[in-house]
Image (cartoon, rainbow, N blue to C red; front, side, top):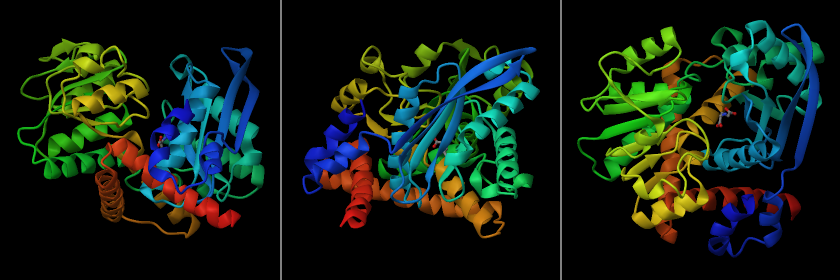
Length: 403
Ligand code: GLU
């Protein structure tokens, strides 16, 4: 429950009135839609959501997820986390999230396009460059963002690139957006290595989608040893380190990392409990739970996925002394570069990749330092530190607006 997240930090923010916490437990608006798309020659009714959690700092912001497991409850959590994330990252947005209950693995490209356009028609009234700005999330990508932007532009009668971020570069997307979540996580890794003076760092990455792959690639290029990666079908392991390009090529040609030549097979479950320095869950929610938390051997966890550790598991790991860089900070590189993309669209600017990477480094390092500082000040975990930073920032604005 969202309430439980907020209850953990309430004692540290006793000067903030209770109604602020109460407001954050419930989104500003939760929209449920249904629409018809022709799938395999049959008219099919699909269901989706757009949940707008909070916009005191700017337009609602957050991705759209296509997955058979999407539920209103899940999107609600994700929208709340986006409000916290944009506040931690200090970008002028609020939080929102969208989702469609659909299994894209079973659809043709034409069908995915039809779903994307129909979903945007269903939510067109509530989105817009200064209202709510969606982006990619699980199983959505730049091409899908382009279709969505195009559909929205048709509806409003003018090209409107700033309605959505994560677009292909030639359609108004930003340099560096595709790498952003992984690169942001990598900058966090560099900060951890510096602050804790880590040596001979071995890393396991669960998830080899956009975030996991780019993180692994940047880390390997910087000389870190990635001993394991996985996708939904399973993983590969090599004590001396994997060649990330080779694994990527294998996944591109076969659809999965499993069976990449020369490497050992490892299950997703076993990957999590490997004896590594840093564990990077980069796949999905709730993979570290009460059941396996006691077996986690990594001393450091960078949450590249949203919500990979349940609250109970988080408490167990905290007691063990595991240092966890929470999702709302660790994966904020994505939304930070989304902000850069939106800014470039709004001001008709085009930035170089170097500019984007340097600005991202500044933003994420500042966010990290702010969270570390607050966590030290209150003697709490980095997760609680991040929530304290975010809720304080949101509350300040809410109180000024209401005062
Ligand atoms: N879906 C990403 C996230 O969870 C990116 C959101 C965005 O760029 O708006 O942070």
